[in-house]
Structures are given as structure tokens and as C-alpha cells.
Image (cartoon, rainbow, N blue to C red; front, side):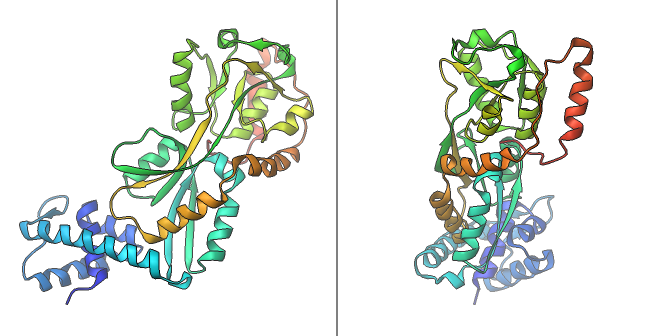
Length: 339
């Protein structure tokens, strides 16, 4: 008789095109995967995978088995989700998140998963949204929490929450926070933005185009706190979540600008591939829906930002801008990912 592990090894080997990729997906060895597939082929009495090509290819018998394997794994997933005890959920979920999630509610998510499912381990990875999307496609992540939507039909997504960003500037630049500005009023100022691997940059670039705003990027930085510090130095303006950086506004180190229309809210989703969904991934998404609260958690994040050393922002002289930037980057040795 066949086993569920054999079906799983065969399905993912065919889906991902190699035993090595399947072994990474299932957190086991390549030899174990090859052995399980060989056992299933012995059960079938015919080869299921053609190993002569660079990538594994389904044989005619393999295509028949593939359809049945997917049905078997989907049924198994439903049984586990609906009937299994908390102790029965075990394994590893490779989770990608953006920097903002890491700064706000990633820790509560890990804590709640650990409490609810003691045998389930999260392996979090913080990176830019575009990079996370690529890693989903490469199957080096099981799910990602990131802004969107901008993915293809191959992915499912579950809405989690949203945030707002506001334009920020150094007081030294002379903006009057009581005056309502239009996007065109910002054109003369360089903008400190997140890099091209940031999903937020992709989303806002489209909005900038709609508003006729030609963004003069002075530099890109994949650390939100460093972006704030560079903005404080007067090296450019930036867009940041106000709740997270309110301590800097209250200390007079940043000015929150009044710009109409507002920047669009950024919606966050749990994203995963449409193929067979792991019941453990489904449970993590359920908990993410429960604990995701950017507004509440940003207050906790703002307390962390409040502990950062204060600095008196000074508008850099033309000949000293590079030196000021170098000093700012030298002070910013912390986290590295975008939100």
C-alpha cells in the first residue's frame, strides 16, 4: 500500500521539478524523498517521473497519479484542519514579512502560534515585498505577509489589515504643517524612498504617476528607521507611518506635512500559492488575522522609536551633504529590511 508521505514526496517533486526542491519544502533529505517516490512507483508498477531530463517530468502514469495525489493531500489537509488536536499540528512554516510587520506585530504572531500549537515552528524572514514574492515563486517560503495586491492568479491572498503613511520632513526645510499642500508642491524636494524590492514603492509609484508627481529620488534605503533619520537631517522628504514615528514628531525632529489628496492606505495580505495548502499554513493565517492590528501595535512600535537618541536636525550645506549622509549611515547599523 502507499502512504501519505509517499504521495506528498511525489506531488512536490513533480510540482517543483526536483527531489532537492521537494526535500527543502518538506524539511527532509533528498535521499528520503527519492526513496518515497521509488516506493510509490513500485506500488504503481510503472515509473511516475522521467528522470532523464534536467527537471523531473511526469510520465503518462505519473499524470494520472498527480491528479489523485492532489485530491489525497487536499482531503488530508481538510481532515487535519477540522479534526486534529492542537498537539497534532507540527512542522515548520517558512514565513516572510516586511519590515513594518517585523517592527509591529510579528512578535505577538510568533508568541500566539507557539502558545496555540506548541509543536509548530515559525521560521520568519524579513525582506522587501518584491523579494518575498520572488521567494514564494521559488518555493523557499510557504507564505508571506506583505502589501498588495500585485501578484498573479497562481496565488491566493487573505486580507489582514491596512496602514496609512504621511509625508514627513525636517523642520529645517521650513514647511508650515498648518498649510495644506498639493503633490506638485513637493516636486522641488528630493524624496528618500524604499528600494525597488519594496512592494510599497511599486504601489506608490503608480499613485505618484496618477498625481503627476515626478519623484526626485535622492537615495533609497531599505530600513524605515534610517529613512526617518535621514529625513531628520534634511536630506529629503519621505513618507512614513505617523503612529510609529510620532515620538520624533512630538520632539520636533520631524514635521508631519498636510498634503491633499492623502497617500493611499496600504493593505496587507497573507499570500500563498494556490497548490495544496498546508493545514499548518492555514492555522498561521487564522492567527495572523486575529493578532494583526497595525493601529494598536504601532503604538508599541512608537514606544520603541521613542527610545532612539534624539538629534537636532540641521539643513545640510551643499558641500557637506555627502558627509552628513555618511555619518547618518554610519550611525544606522540596525535592521535592514523594507516595509
